[in-house]
Image 1 (tube, rainbow, N blue to C red):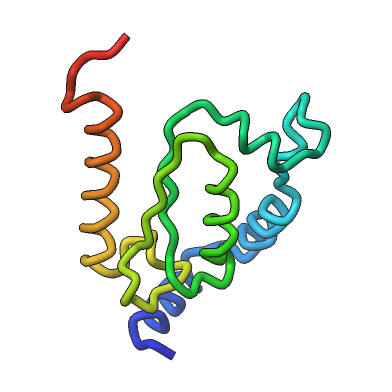
Image 2: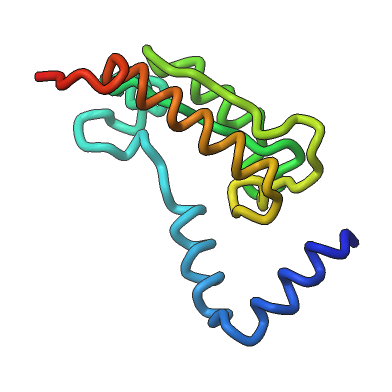
Length: 126
């Protein structure tokens, strides 16, 4: 096991309620965008109805949210950009957790770039 991961697990054992993991798992397993009103269970139709510009950032080797699932969903969203968080990293699900400074820097840079594009460099939009 990676030493930093072990340290994170040990630190969270005393501060995190195990029931929270149960509820997170239930929410994760029961979430279905196809259940959005009017979509009649159609996952592809629900994703295709997204009008907002979308940024999807994925972690490599994420066993909880596999990269392929996010990339498959992105195929059905009109205006989407996908970014892999430090492809050479092995942090998996923790890539978005702020544990590695390089991951945090990349996430921040990508979000700034995305928001800058949305606002055309800070221009006030209607």
